[in-house]
Image (cartoon, rainbow, N blue to C red; front, side, top):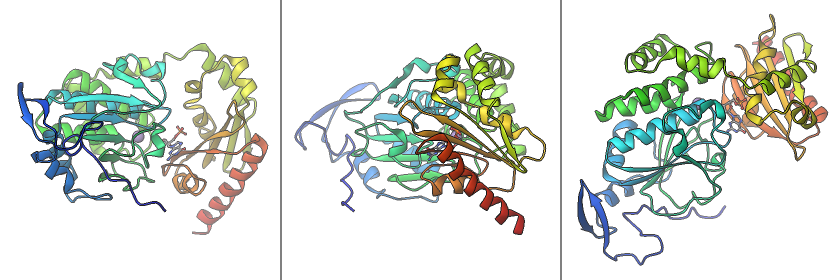
Length: 374
Ligand code: 5GP
Ligand code: MN
């Protein structure tokens, strides 16, 4: 394996400019001249070597946020409610702290989440460049998950709550107990002393609502409702958010669902359905319309685990896995190169759809047999 590239932050190395050259930056409103490599930020950042997982991650992250000036905020490809909401709230926190935040993702924000405050600030990019103290990655188990090129050289702050989360960053905070990355951003906001604005509260409420499937799964606990209550008090508007998320589907989504349900199969505790690329074209469906389709198979009484397969235009297969209790689908997805949570995970497989179906059914059958024998 190649040696990891040295990390840079703007304080340590001014990209495209010789090191040591005096740089101008703004500090608390006044123009100050600083020497790159000699600022307090540089020392602070240098403390965290690749793979660090501090005992007090919130304090460590806030320390870096306070000392840096410019941050990149990024989440995973095909951003979902948690990805979008947590990025937006993180951007708002950074702005309140007087920092500059650039929000990027490899794919566009799905229409469902475009009404969130500041959603148009998230730019869809193939590559990033420029000077940043750090790249904050939300919800990613690797740089690769972001599908944004050019991230490698930055200092990485990794904030994740997935079962398959990994310490790939310089500074890592992974909390499997958190319902969403948004819940973790909420904790950062509280600890920073920043004000929880109605806009932040709305974004964060969306992260909790969507990642728990409407408070149905994904580690919902008493404190989840305490959080929801706090966000509501701060102005989240649960009814308005629910209307936007659950009652604003485009007609194409329903046509796609019809196609998927006509391919529904059942084998005892397993249920699966799929759509071909042709089904997508015929329904006029976009990839966002596929969100939640797998859950219809899981609604069947007695079904423990469900799979939804979608043929991509180039022939590969996107697989969504869900389980009620017994099967750890995160482990299954991870064994195939994907990841996720114990009860909700995904991966991209080779086609054709029949082969991918047989492959995943084989693994699910084995997992069920194993769960039964426990
Ligand atoms: P979905 O089935 O809704 O696409 O994804 C369910 C969960 O699994 C989400 O939390 C998502 O982040 C995660 N997930 C889906 N696909 C992948 C993948 O290809 N790689 C990883 N690491 N996680 C995935
Ligand atoms: Mn999430």
